[in-house]
Image (cartoon, rainbow, N blue to C red; front, side):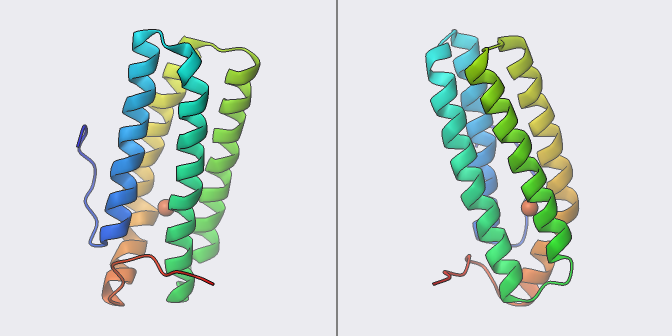
Length: 137
Ligand SMILES: [Fe+2]
């Protein structure tokens, strides 16, 4: 693990969070190396993974009919919208310094989100014995 983050009592959340942290570090490494061609695809992969990551949390919340579901999902949707904007901006006019700042902002958001909505959600999931994201058909 390339960076410490708050460990929650639910395994699948920790796995997704480790991937998120790794993806941000990977983006920074590409910027650092000047491999700008690779940044767009890496950001697309981060966005796709984040959609799945949020989707897993939302499916688990639905399974236990978690009361603050709408608020937590609303925050996920807001962040996905921000990520889409950052990607579009990069694709239109790559700006390394701006991208560095966005990554710092995402990291700040992530730790704050982990320590609030995700923490509360994970305690409820753990109380309900949920360790893995439910598969919804
Ligand atoms: Fe979340």
